[in-house]
Structures are given as structure tokens and as C-alpha cells.
Length: 105
Figure 1 (cartoon, rainbow, N blue to C red):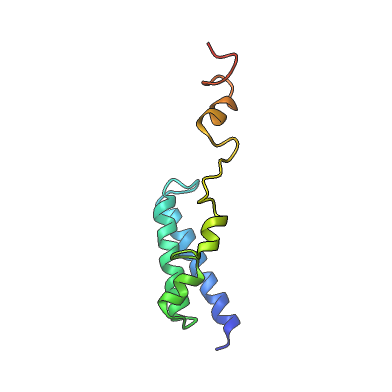
Figure 2: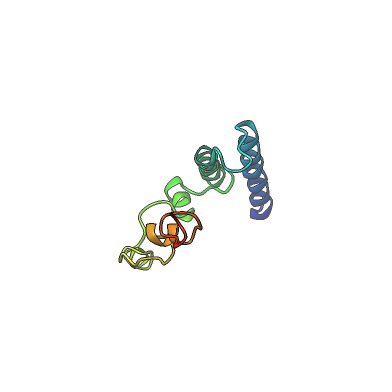
């Protein structure tokens, strides 16, 4: 079997498990997102291992699991760069009627 049919079979399987798990758990808006996400990651690793023949450590690395390279850590915000709007004051000030709003009494 060539790579394309196996890839499409794997994607279909991952989607079916994703949809089925979310439906069984009643997670139509992400209520059980952590559980569903964990199941999807495990199934994706299994598909990479069984259908595509990737060793488990390689499959995990391909999915972005594991330690990032030092350059990626620096670019990813380990420098402590603040993000406007996500600080507590920025968040509350952007929501009318909450702490930080000039009209709040």
C-alpha cells in the first residue's frame, strides 16, 4: 500500500475517533477538550506508528511533542515579552462593566 491511501485512512480514522469521542462525552463546544485532545494525540501517534511505520519517538517529534530547540524557545516567548490585551489590567479594561472600566462604579 502506498503512502497516500494509508495517510487518508489514518486521517479518516483520526477524524472518526475525534468526532466519536466528542459526541460520546457531549463535548460539542469543547467541554471535554482536554480528554478529547489527549485521545486524538494518542490515536494520531498510533496511526503514525502502525499505518505509516514511524518509530514512536519520531512520530512524537513530528507531531511537535518534546523539547523545542533553543532557537524555538527564544522565538516562542521565553524572553518574557508581554502581549498587549492579555494582561489582567488589559483584559479587564477591554470589557465594559468590569474592573478597569472608567464607567464602573
